[in-house]
Amino acid sequence: VSLALGLGKTIVDGGIVWNYCPLYPNFTSPFADPKDLIRNSQNKFWAINLSHFIEYNPIKETEFMIQTDLKDADYDDTLKFIASTYDASLDKIIMGTGNDGPRIINFSPLLSMNEFKFNDLMKKIIKVADEAYNNPVEIEFAASIDQRERKMKFGFLQVRPMVVSYEEVNLKDDELYQEEVLVASKKVMGNGKIDYIKDIVFVKPEKFDKKDTKQIASQIAAINKKFVQDKKSYLLIGFGRWGSSDPWLGIPVEWGQISAAKVIVESTLFGINVELSQGSHFFHNLSSFGVSYFSINFDGEFQIDWQWLNNQKVIEETEFVKHIQTEKPLTILIDGKTSRGVIKK
Image (cartoon, rainbow, N blue to C red; front, side, top):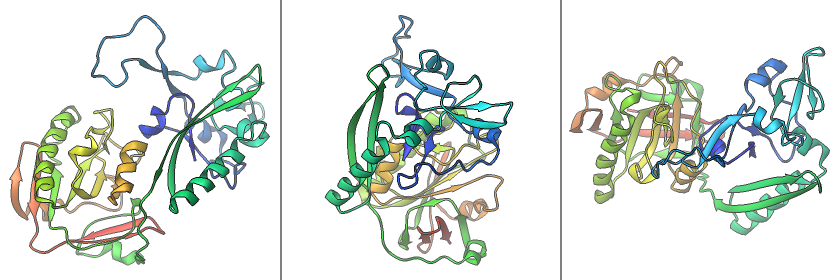
């Protein structure tokens, strides 16, 4: 379960959130050093902009929203039930906001005290939804706490089934490093084997610039439209977060602009080293349509074989994007149990 203070945009955009397992709500933080926990805790949140100073921009997603610091939620005790505090004198994290110090959004009071039975409710909803769909599900919800009455309002927004492949793939570690590998990763979403893709659409690394991501999205959309018309699938390779609402963090495509992609590779470049995309709505489409997702770092142990890509037959080329076709289908293997995957030439 992913939890965040404020509007759900923080989660949708892949921001810093608190993740926990309903079976173990009191499981300790993965960070041994309290200072590491502070650095990796949510420090900003999205809210409705109720001021009169709103820039008129009807095409801007955040026209009536504002992103602000935690201090704006601390003065009126909004953080009381969801935050803990770092005590520098003890060098430890204290549950609640009774002491002065840096706040940490770890939802410890809500999950540990169980005054509002929040985790019990989460387990019940997940169980009912799983049984209803007979399949793993993704749930969206919102909650608010009335401090005076000490009651929680819970809004069940929607539930969506997640498509899961049960094909067993057992990838050995040495398969990730073989010569015929186009790209491999230990951060992969999906499961199964794909052995029919011959088309690859990729963003030219030598042409990529963050200021051009909107143009790149448009050029990919035009190529994708042809695949949709021909009822064909392709492998898509690009940089930064796919589907990001911030064009400076990645390529701001809508789902319809890449809907024919069967496998997507997300790579970073120098200066763009963000975490794997986590946007709920974008990734619901990936899981629903069985699209696999690879994430690699530009300075990591796994690299894309750009030289091989540039030696393939060119079908179409634009200023920023190239569509190529291989002589034989790629072999794509994804081990969902270990989150490892490999794309073989």
